[in-house]
Length: 260
Image (tube, rainbow, N blue to C red; front, side, top):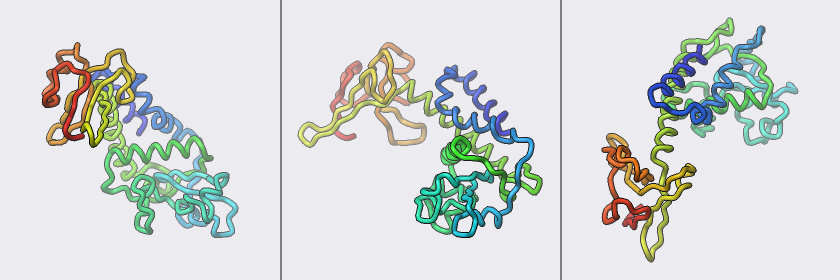
């Protein structure tokens, strides 16, 4: 179900915004590959929390397991990282999905409860899930918050999927905006103050045009970021979200600024 939800978001975004498919692949490659791999096994092993907790290398078990969003992986070959004394040992024997994206490694932070996380954080968590799908052997599913006694997805997992779809849409919009309005180069010195300028590679976006610096404001925000706008594109130049830098010629590729 999740893969169809995400592909629907991708297709709708492409159709509405005319974003090239290969641009979106840079966002969706890991996640979409993950979605098509989930649930393809005919027989899925189901584990309970006490069984998972046994595989933390502090017991007699020779295996190291961890769980992300209810999917259990054998990370034994990474024992230097996941075994006692390793930097990721706190993840062994449990589902601490929340800690992967919050950095809260306290006892309360090591939980699979994702309440209150942003769509962007959920996307990051699925990147971690894709990493474990690619690098480590899947063991099965954890009975609990995300999978029921029959190994079927729960309402909690469906809710996470919906937030993921929202996060992917936001990420696609950010990517599309970064290509339309790449970030400026900037520099500051005590002697001469600040300068912003545009090149054909500024913002990490290679293109055939350099552009002119402009302030790009987000709706409802007083803050802005410096972006490069194609000077030959009157539609872009006249966007209500853009503002010219003070005391800078309209078509100048470089501007002196008082603050950065």
